[in-house]
Image (cartoon, rainbow, N blue to C red; front, side, top):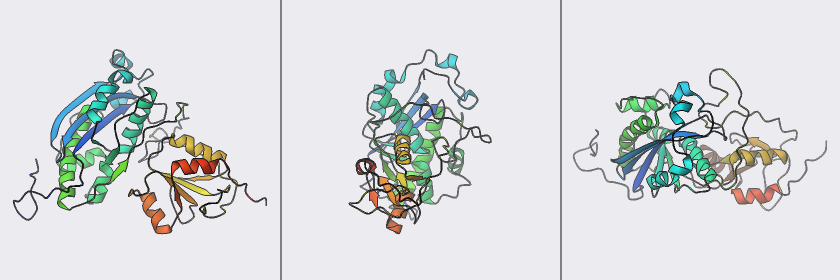
Length: 328
């Protein structure tokens, strides 16, 4: 285990006062990646402010549907048949998450799956911030060949025993997160924390899954399934101007958590005649985000390009009255 020392000597590492007081390192295994998929197992390692393990917890979850890719997670219908429903473990899970920053590898996936399960159970997860260890590794400029958990573990000499088992994945991540956290503290680095918002409007309508290559139609680096939207039929009229209406053809990008399911928001924008962009460029008309002070790549680029920014509530109002495109 790495000692909590500075590189220069034996004095303890000065700990940034702004750092969180505790962390919940989480891993969930699921039936798939779409919005109708379910959690089938969950694990939490609770860590103190400096990354030391306090305790850990693990549970199976009955997804009330087929278990999905058994060849990956190894959990069959028979193994899950007697497991508790998510609603049955929601309270204990919440106790493990309360007053802590949720830490996960590709944290947007784990958080969105958790948020959706709590929404189904008509409850709210007690999570206000998350930290993605992929983002932290990038901030630390770790010399990794890729951003897989196994690569992060190998960098810190952590041995994986059961890949894709929630408890072992959470253990591995906790052990790799500790030296990452201490390296960040030693350098006085600002942690890449992002806001978490519970879902208040969502749908379980299945998303069609495409068969593409060997990845089941899912984009690399994203928790969402690939979706091919029809091309926007209207030309881009330029940037949104404060106090004016959105206009059909405007390019709209989204960043961070939304209370309304992201896909529902994107569908509504498309139906209104807007061009939903997956990235941000100088041609982007508007960025929608509830966390304009975050360090996401889209927010950073919006600052660089001077792209207008509005929050989810304001965007909802703008969607009610989108100006038609000029006829050609």
